[in-house]
Image (cartoon, rainbow over all chains, first blue to last red; front, side, top):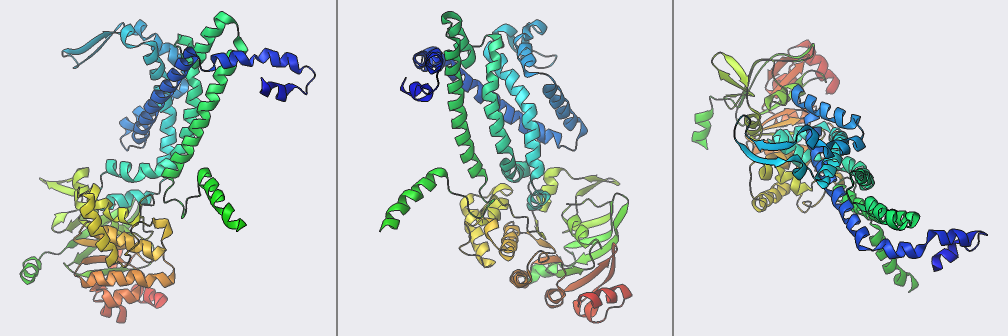
Length: 280
Length: 262
C-alpha cells in the first residue's frame, strides 16, 4: 500500500488507478498454494522441455553435419517440419494423438510386444505438453548447436584426430566444450522464451502458472491482479535464469581470455576491501 | 638397442611409392617417392603450394591418398588390402594408427579450453585410457622437458607463441609416438621465439626420434637434418644429404629457390 501511494499519489487520478490494481489481492494470491503449484509445474515443464530440446538439438546438429546424406537429410526434414508448424498446433496434436493411434505398443518389429498401453493413459496432458515443447525446441536448438560447432576452428578437429581421437571423442571432448561459448547466450534466450511459451499449454487445460491464475480469476473475477501475480513470477524466474546464464557463460569462457573479468559480487567485495585501505 | 637397430634397419619408418593426391581438378602430389629410415630426421623444403604439407598430412591420413602406396612401419596408411583391392580402414583403426604418430601444426592448435597440462594429457587420458594421475606425472615431466615447468595450470592464450608450440610438442610426445611430423612448426612465430622451439626439436632429434619436418628454417635443416628433400609443384625435385642439396644443388629449380631463401 505504501508503495502505491508513493508511486501514484502525484497523479490526479492516482487514487482510482491505485485501487484498481488491488495490491492486497495480489499479495493474497502471490504465494497461494494454487499459484505456487502452477509455478512449480511451469518450472518443471520448462526444465524437461529444455532438456529434451538441448539433447535433441545436439543430436540433430551432429546429424546435420554428417557426411552421410541419409543422416543429414533426416535431421533436415525434422528441423523443417518442427520449425515449419506452430508450436500451438503441435501441442494440440500431441494431446489428440489418441485419435490417430488409440493404443501404443513398444516391442520388437513383427515380434512380441514388450509394452502396451492406451494412448490416453500414456500421453497425459503433462506428457503432451513437454513432448510438444521439447521436440519443437530441439529443432531450434539444433541450429544453435550447429552454429556453435561451425564456430570452432578446423585445426582443433585435426589436432584431436592427430592424437588418435575418434570423431565422437573429438566432438565431445574438444569441439562441443568450445562451441558452448557460442551456444550458451542463445540457449539462455531460448530458456527464457520457453519459460513463457509453457503458458501455451493452458489450451489443453494443463494447470501451469497461467492456467492456474485463470482458474482462480474465472471464479473471483480479479482478472488483472491475478495476471499481475503471474507476471511477477515470470519476471522473478527470468531474473534468476539471467543470473544463472552469466555464471554458466563464465565457466565455459575459461581459457578464452587472459583474465576473466570479476563477477559483480567479486567487484562489490573488492570495493568493500579497498575502502578501509584508502581511508588510512 | 644395437641388436634392435640391426633387426629393423631393413625396414624404413615411412615409405612412399608414387603417392598422388588431387584437390578437385588440381593435382597437388604428382607421384612422391620417399623413404625415411628409423631414427632419421628428414627436412622437406620448397615454395608454398609445392605440396609438402599435403604430403605430411597424408602420412597420418588427415588427407586421403588418391593413388600410390604409403607405408608407415610396414603398414599401409589408411587402407587395408583385401584380395586385389584396397579398402579404407574403419575409423577406430585409423584413429589407433594416428595415435602412434605425433603431429605438430603451424598454428599450434592447442585446445584453448584446457590448461597446458590438460592439453598434454588429453591424448593419454582419452585415447589410451591412462589414469589422470599417471598421465599428469608424465605430463609434468614432458612440460619440464620442453622447458615449461611451473606452467601446468596456464591456459594457451596466456602463453607466448613459442611456449604454445612447445606445449604442442609435449602433447604429441605424451602419446609416445614412433614418428613425429612437424608442419612448419616455426612459421607462425615471431623471429625471436623461433630459437626456443628449434632447440626443443634439436633435443628430440638427438634422442633418436624419427622426424619429418616441413620447414623454411634452412639452418635447422642443415644442422639437424639427416636428409633434405626439395619439393616443387607436387614432385620431389632433389633429395639427399643436406650438405649436398644445399651446397651443390643439381637442379635449376633448387638453385632458384635456395638463392631466394639463403
